[in-house]
Image (tube, rainbow, N blue to C red; front, side):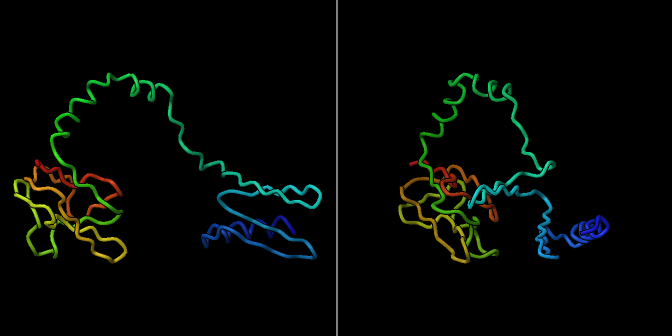
Length: 165
């Protein structure tokens, strides 16, 4: 394969956003990849393939000083806000999905801050894969905090509401 042919192939791959090309020519096999490469090492009958990251895609390195400064903060500062929060019951998302405060875009929210709620009452909907899952309250109390808004992506275990029981 000529250098001119390789240059044309590289240009075409870049222009057309192609990440891999395999060419068979004269009994030889050429594999061309963008964004990284694999190094093939043949030892006897075994073939070892190791993936190597491309030079421009290295992950950022976190400096040790940053980690130490976070770890060296007094633990009493972190525990004070939690004491306030611990007086409330937290309603957490049971799944990953999109949070909706109301059943329809033009409908009022299921609950607002200050709303009295009872066990089994619907607080919101979390949509996952076109399934709309009603999240129900599991205690009697008053809604004191709503930590997400309609359209937010919520993770499993994310606190959605804090309810004063």
